[in-house]
Image (cartoon, rainbow, N blue to C red; front, side):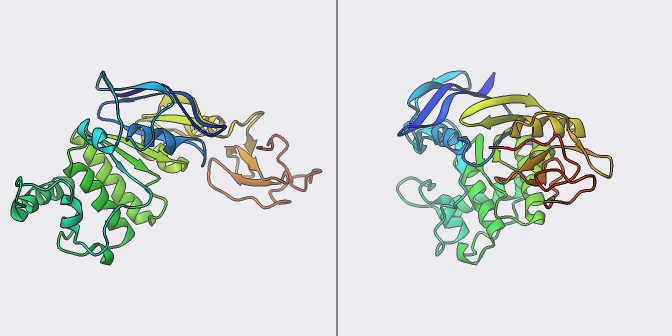
Length: 297
């Protein structure tokens, strides 16, 4: 049974169709990457799933049952939590206070000891390594993100959405985040990871769904991500056409042009290519040796 099934999701903002009939499925206990360039409708789709936006058309099924998600409280009641790009924490409160606020244990009267015991158990289980009594204002960005993830788990979320979680993290913090996400998966959680970074997608995901211009362009399983898979995702994500380019080192890759028609970068390996560089005979656009790259509009 699928953890999430979204069918025919349409969301318009005035004349702009941010989501144009999207079908999106996530299996239970997997890390599913939602991949696409900025502005393609990834976050809009997940904000609909979390109840922040209401779809103009379409249906949502959670664990096989049709769901009406009017707000985030409905989402949490269905076991769906979301970590946003901009953290929703109160800087002057402690980590523990931020986690339990709105979900206090003990009924009418708050039982701080009982709350702390539950949060501490989650910290030990998933390896968060957080000081519960430290104020959020004193934490690094990576630690604040851990607080947000822990907050969703504390509220009972089995499906966790992360919106561009690595955008402000250092490489070391990214690796630590990935360890936490893999541990959450082992514990039975389902992870939806919104990103536009190909390297992170290929190293972390069980399956990938590519969104382009408000539509699902491709959903594929990438359990064993080899170089050929990387090239295929590049071609789908950026709609490359023609033969791949072979560099001086003999590696095949796809290239992207900027608005002037100059080659902007090597998409498969993250390499930046300056206009007029790269060996070979100079062509009319000012670059050399890349006859098969096609301008992206």
